[in-house]
Amino acid sequence: MAEPSIALEDVEVRVKDCCILDDVSLTSGTCEWTLLVGPSGCGKSTILRTINGLCPPSKGRVLNLGTWLPGRNRHEARKAWRSTGTVLQEVALFETRTVLTNVELGCRAAGLPADKARSEALTWLDRLGLVDRAADYPASLSGGQRQRVALARAFAPRPRLLLLDEPTSALDQVTAQVVLDGISELVENGTCVVMSSHRPEEVGMRCTRCVVLDGGRVVQVTSGVPDLAVP
Image (tube, rainbow, N blue to C red; front, side, top):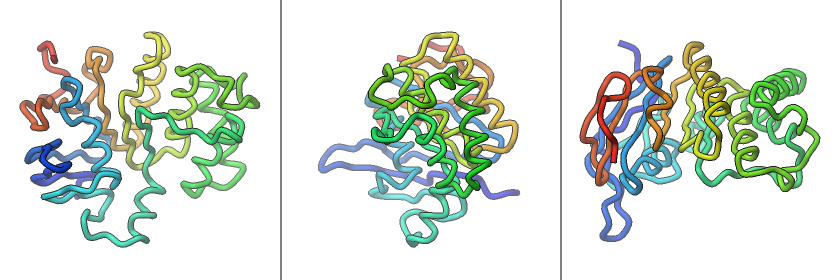
């Protein structure tokens, strides 16, 4: 059996006396889309940060593209980061670089040559409806446009692992479906996606599994989005 792209084994995350994640275990592999759902504060964002190494576990361990945390060295961390696309809720763009350059830099960081980086950047900006803003700077963009630039930057290198925190939260329904179509294409071509959402009905049966969280614990795992009202 092939090793999963990511795995959490009995993970606990504590901040002082507050338990953010409590005994969380899950796996996701190549060509799989794992959706995290649950109320605000249930631990969805923390799981994504823990997978990425931004929030080390207090207990348990995390597999990220072949290396385990804690325990990996700087070289292993850099190799994993180059193969990971991440979009958190706090969208971070290079404010002194154009929209096009922001996306190109994501491709270059992943190891793409300059000509391929330019081609992929323009392709994804066009798909996400921003090619006409390629020469503009982030300060001139709306919140939804900034989110789409960050998504284009994450999608363009076609990463092995994609971590997305509420990626459609600032988007209208039509644009959200374009983004979800892009994610589906990446999954079909081998990307492992772990994504949080407050609107699981948008994803529907696109996802491989849905992990329902409450109070920092996994309370349900289903194939596709379950027929229940997530609080």
